[in-house]
Length: 110
Image (cartoon, rainbow, N blue to C red; front, side):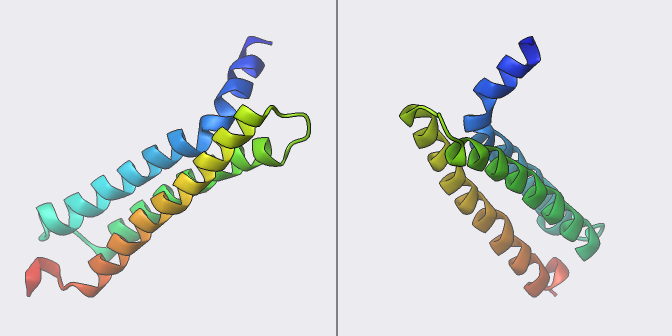
């Protein structure tokens, strides 16, 4: 009962919370492996970090979508859910664009 109430209160915020975690994870993995120490970085590490980051962002967007599309939700919860989904779109761009750059820019600026 208590976990269900916590989950119900978290769901409108899911896009913001999980999206932030996803973009942070992808940024750390991609930045550390590509730009901090490029000798040990590999495109595979960046690809895995990007996929995990986008999965977290997608889960957050899906959680917020369930609140937005649900019947009987208050206007405040629906508004928070739509803001969370829009933030997930921005978070996805923030993950995809550096991913493309890491594949285009040569390792160690060769």
